[in-house]
Amino acid sequence: MLLLDLNNIHFAYPGLGPVLEGASMQLEPGQRLSLVGPNGAGKSTLLKIIMGLLAPEQGTISAFGKTCTREADFHEVRRRIGFVFQDADDQLFCPTVAEDVAFGPLNLGKSKQEALAIVDNVLTRLGLMHLRDRVTHKLSGGEKRLVTLATVLAMEPEVLILDEPTNALDPENYGRLTGILKELDQAILLVSHDPEFRAEIAPDGYHLKDRELLRV
Image (cartoon, rainbow, N blue to C red):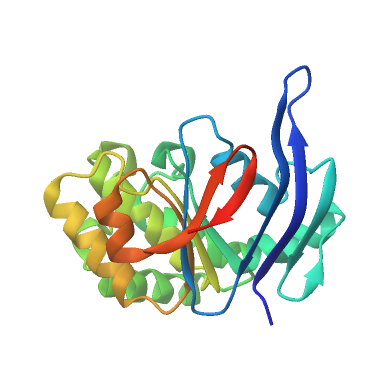
């Protein structure tokens, strides 16, 4: 079963020219793919379409074997796909790291005790327990990036979508993020301008060119 199957996606923002014209792609279990292309080509737009945050004018989106046409269809998609935003500050909003990481599990119906156990487990796996009780907005850019990944992994997603995850990372946290991602089992769809990072994490993928996706 394909995790993601986009077929003939067309999209344009109101009053502007087309961004996507016939874009198609597939993601299989365990697969790691990069999405490359120049700034403004539509990579972030495509990610938002996958998550149901934007609706295509034409084409079909299937996730986990089910065609997604209504907002309700994407509720399940957002539970099973972890989306790490380009800007960590868009994703972190609780007073402390522990509260940010616990937020997702609590929303999934976990008890407070269960959620805190997940917090400790995820932060331990990622080597971030030293940040557990820190005030989130006082973290460095690199620390915020890693905590954002922790908040997503706490939801136990089957797919990770990463939009420029190396932004604001110093060499130490860059190395830590690379090591973490290489150890994960999830399928990954990666958007990154960093060729070395792509080579490490997702060397195969698609090139968004002339509003279509070409396999590279």
